[in-house]
Image (cartoon, rainbow, N blue to C red):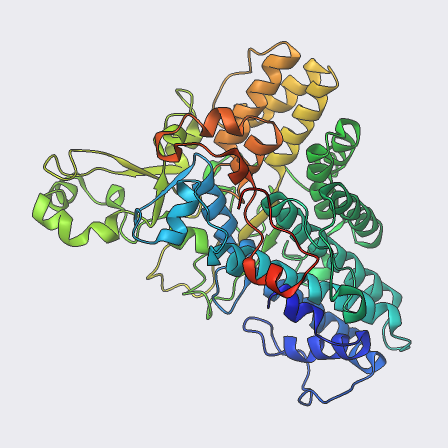
Length: 511
């Protein structure tokens, strides 16, 4: 669904009803009740006439985020891939054979690049449309069978999801249209809202969510961490404040998450990304039947089908015969592997380097020349598992980021001792000694480095960090494959189709 389709959906009453009915057909969203096919007009009161109906709409919203239909979305792993290519994290095994993908890696995006629309723009606005419909539908429902608790959860969780979508839209495209309703009369010819206004809306949505949502995970029924709670909203709000350089409020929100008593850093790095792990603040649950036995997109993209490191040395030597290796190279090397810049960024003794990164040796002969390919193994699950219930869910928010947010916010406020203490929490878990940074500038540099080595290949953190801290031109401008460096590529082009359909939309400069 593109933004034009969003605008033409119709009135609020019809939109809210239609989205609810449509959601029950989404893969991965368990049918909670039997309903009739959509009809021309259904009052909002009927569409949100009970707790089960409203909860079903909310389940559909989460299903859209995880894209259980199998499509590649910004919210199910594609941000990690394409922002990682745009930054200095990832390379593609396909090289330049897929031009639209290679444009991200070389930072030569063209304005007609279909990936920017199909992976980022369309899915985000489709999800925003659903969130807006739920917010409106709940607000307009007068049913006595829709209780206040369900109203609060539906509204709070939808506002969180809307803020999450706008966060990635504005960080990828800059100023973006900001529909807050399903009413086509208000959204038909939207202008781009200034990024500052988009951030302001995110803050409002997340502040509302922290007030409406529960502090625990009881809303998920099984207490799984797959529905956002009060602290998930606070965690995203902390990030939003950080990006706005509102250091005080970033610290306050991160502090509320850290001191909630619900989370702790996993001592074993192998356990960080497990489902419902102690470090998880919010995760998305994939549908095993719709996603190849529950394998997460990042596992399929970053981990090879066959990990040579898991074979005995004698078998590895057999596979490293040049002729044999050439036959199975696509199984040994993942679709996306790490750049030398990232692989070499880790300090000696960093357990993240040995636990979250694996490598593939290659034959000494041409064209391999004994080059090692390094890849992210944060999600080591791969195809072929007979286990239909995944042991990992897709991590959206986790505690380590909150420590790094608070460390940066404290350093910016000259609380060097507090910043160092937070930084050391993450470093010590990785097997590293306390930081030696003692000044504000040194601590900020240390936090930036720690974010690079802790959050690599997760949700495009590196790409966004380089941009928000003003380091992108310096870092990316020195990488050979990105020459000649073009600073305007730090935002993606507005999809051409959107500009053609909306006379009020303008293109980003130089595209």
